[in-house]
Length: 428
Length: 179
Image 1 (cartoon, rainbow over the protein chains, first blue to last red):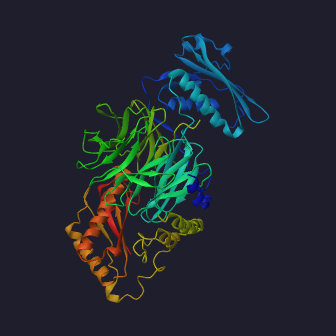
Image 2 (tube, each protein chain N blue to C red; image 1 turned 60 degrees about the vertical axis):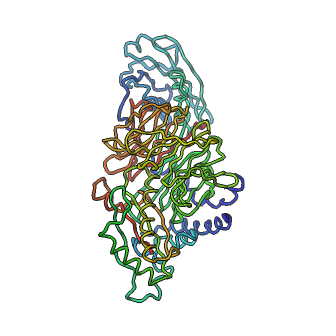
Image 3 (cartoon, one colour; image 1 turned 135 degrees about the vertical axis):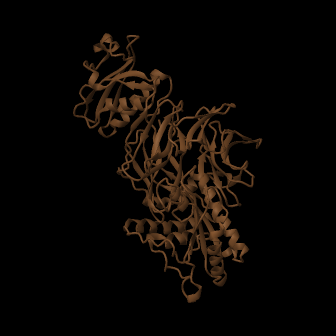
């Protein structure tokens, strides 16, 4: 890695850190009927704060699909600590959980105290005091959301994670592309790269510090690795033909990709440190869109060796390759769930191209999305949601669906197309 | 692998890209007159020449050509859904390019393969390459030297027409001859 970073220090030039206008907003499109009713009371002392912390927590919990938050207008009592909570009041509002808290300004920022109450059990579940700088109140709200989510569901919260995505505007030879990173709620977006040539397929390194992506800035595709915080980057591959679909190994030392330097696109593995590439697939067909299993032992990839695109699994060591999907004549771009037991993919149904899920253990394929122009599914590190690109009217937007298909939300951008989302790993 | 020197020259070329990009050109939309770029062998040079939308006259395959052997005007051919076969109605177009390339052994063409937006992006990248290579093979059988041709697939990344209509899709499934 060291030798790599020495080569291309100049690229700080390309790194334009800005809070640009590419923030995404959230629209809940489907709520789960099994969502848990929860109340998030506005924090006492938060009237003049730059962010409404309780609102951010409430929005996070609602977006997860696990919770159905109570409207603020229905809260005629607004306690700020556990001692003041009248359980009967909240029980009569059918609330099962309640979040209360208060904010205090300090010399260096804010101190946020929150408590999570179990209304039916009439007890305090957790509570914590969190300090935050004024410019990181959203981060503190995401942290609190993570604690609440895990205390109730036993699943690690993924609200403090980020998403990378690509924007595009224009047509034909007159286009502008951008690579952005934003918080998981679409806010706080930062431009990573901008170009008048296509940018594709961002992929997070397992430690969340780097992105590998495809850029056509030399008027042909090449794979780059960029440090998200510093903007420093290296060109990792630039072979003749396609250099595409990078995916990191769980230890961050290797990147699987699709290269067509030897004819048809095949799967190769790049050693990040010494830059050697090893060919993995040997077929006279398209092999692309690799994805590394969480245990590092196998790769999923898309191949049309049977005629149309289907998902295959390659096992390191034995070299064994098995076909995974058999439903329909178009299955592509698969990704493992974080536990490695399921895959998420794009399936062409009678309605169109949709996000689907399949158990690796011989399970049937289940369509999750209701949209029909879907691409690029990327699963949250806790496995609860899948973010993907789809069409809304004439624009490409990001959308997300819960892994059980019960709830979904959309993240439209103010203008242009947004696509190719990649959900980061856990960052803390 | 001579990556370090290449990376250095790319660095220079790319910093030009950045500077040119910042100077907010209006964007000359002249996609069919790229001058003579050799996209395959020297990515760095191409990047430098390709900045700022000032394609065309920078490098000179156009220089010294006879008036009767100009680059054929039709430089885009279209394909059926999920197919890479050259349709009979476009054979004359490809033949005209073959004649031009045979008559001008110094001319270079980059074949850009494109798909419509349906399906996944990286799989479409592979389909776009398949289309461009189909044209490359055809030109080859017509006696065009391999050294005069290179292929770049753009997949679904650079649509010529927007929208989700069948006619927009048809316009986007294409191979473009870039000289």
